[in-house]
Amino acid sequence: MRLAVLTGLYVGVVVMAQVGTNKIVDVPLTGLVAPGGTFLIGIALSMIEIAHRTAETRRDGFLNAQMMVACGWVASAILAAYLAILNVMSPEDPLFDRLAGTWRIVAASLLAFAVSETVDNSFGAYLRDRIHDAWRVVATNAISVPLDSIVFLLVAFGSLDFIKGQIFVKYVATLIVGVPLVLVLRRYVRAR
Image 1: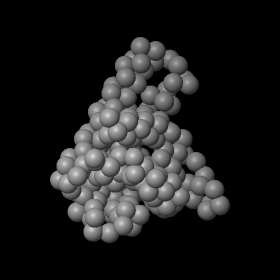
Image 2: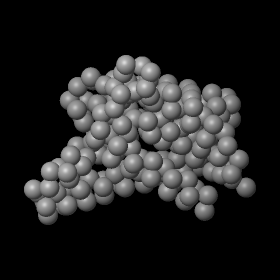
Image 3: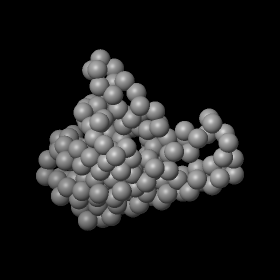
């Protein structure tokens, strides 16, 4: 039950990030810009570390986390298909045209997640019980954030123009929201 709730929250964060990525935003106090969904991806990457605590063993924790990633991947694919269908049904809606471009962002997310979330999950499973959970989140995101950013930006936008802003925002989100979230939620998802 706890894994299901965690998975639902993760899927919601992933889908919201994809829709938010349609807007390029100024990163406060930095002079950097990044896709709007970037603010949530550092949190999504951190949530994978929570799933490792839903099972008693590293292997089962890895499998639970990988199942969460797969659910996020499926939800993203459904979102892309749904938006493509809606766009065909009403092609002359200028307001929706921007949102309909989400399919490209979702496709980029699917590829980036397949790569970065799997690496994040594998490294996180290895580090489980070897280092404190807060450091585990920081260590895994140190690898998965740049990897996710490079793959995503190249597929979604065809350039790395937003790389500095995207990496900065993901790291800040990891530290300000992701680490505290993991430290609080790990108590509620532990395997009995």
